[in-house]
Length: 115
Figure 1: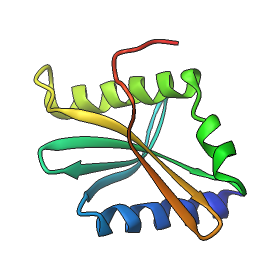
Figure 2: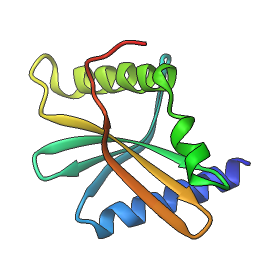
Figure 3: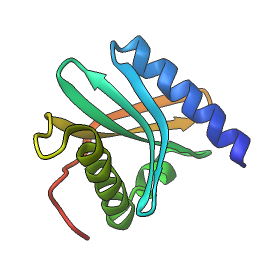
């Protein structure tokens, strides 16, 4: 299971690089949660959640409000650590790897909601 997740993350990052994003960090762990990948899309910092499932609909549904909150909190800690109180523009993307298919949900959820 872990190997499938690692393979999906590698494929997702390669896909994003192909779309012009620059991968800055991977697997950033915090007490509140983990960020699979952090990328730059021009001036925008992108926090990426990668999901691997047999069917893409299952993967999209698995990034629920609770998971979004964990990702937001981890992103806040990352931003605080690297930028203090002057955060750059950012967004939250989800990349779904389902078999040979990759779906990219850019700006999948906002950074200002709580569950």
